[in-house]
Length: 308
Ligand SMILES: [Fe+2]
Ligand SMILES: [Fe+2]
Image (tube, rainbow, N blue to C red; front, side, top):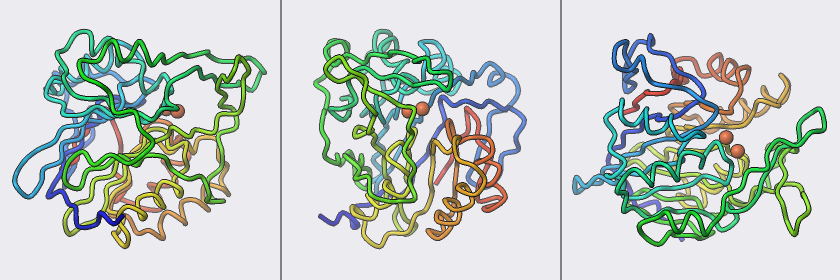
């Protein structure tokens, strides 16, 4: 299936929840940064949430909330301060079943009349944890499908297939894990039949927006499926389309200098116009991406708006 002729004309992306908040960055080019004043009350947390508005050739805009942050308060606080009304969402998409991505969902649904379907992978539900270096288990964190379905106003789209949400706007569906460049996150575990097993992250999903004349904007949650596996999925859906922008958590915080240099070189081979590294990418990785890509790697913060 080739979907390359399916385009959006433009998009706006707003970082609603992220680990970092900075109200003193200068706006420039397509990037508008939050300003001192009202935006001084924006909050960062260990989590991610993106607000995506994609406009098609007929001037129709589709709004997607991609993930919900970790806590009950931050996503609601930040949406209010950024003048985003959650009730205007056409879709909600869950990147994967980690609490720093779904944690703010149920309270947000409880307080707002959101009639948008939730798109999630069937494996996103269940019990997850993280094996810490000291041998202790962090978690367990449980995402119950029944609880989520009860909270939603409409039936969710629970599928491992890509979903075409609007012209040029797709979820990735299941991503095959094949690239040797992608290192597994070995500390992650999930519960199966009352036993903790290695988490293979079959649920990890990206969002793609294919921008007319420019290429694909690839957005990731934690990118546990692996960046190069995710880019390969984008190429399956949009063969030959350039990578216009990469946005999201890359989970490169456990990579050393040598591995980081290798993956950043491999990413540079895609020649992206923009790399916006957020959330779990890691301080050293973000530093090295900035060195490699210069101003094509803008600084990230809660409240950043990208107009593409
Ligand atoms: Fe995660
Ligand atoms: Fe995460």
